[in-house]
Length: 92
Image 1 (cartoon, rainbow, N blue to C red):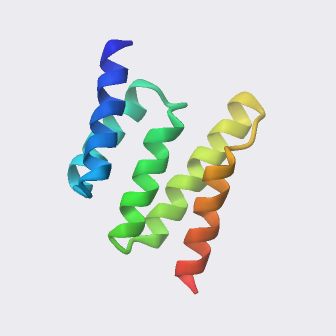
Image 2 (cartoon, helix red, strand yellow):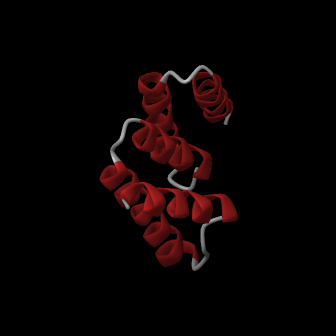
Image 3 (cartoon, rainbow, N blue to C red):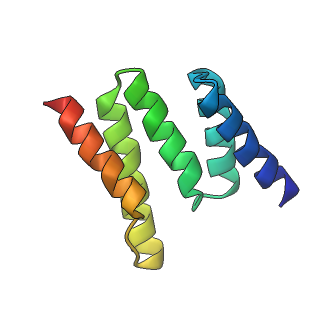
């Protein structure tokens, strides 16, 4: 549990510093540890968007949405829906 919390803290630190590679690294580690970690998915999607990889960002978001829906029967948060709108806007 402490390791997961440390990863979330590192994601937040690198997010504030706009260090995308480090943010991605720790986000993927957090997601491997906890596949339900919405914050890690959000950071991954945002990093790919900031790098101009809208297709990858959309795929990661869609995969997480499908995962949540199939495993828990729930929808992602409002923040995740806002990210989807952001992706769509950038794809135009």
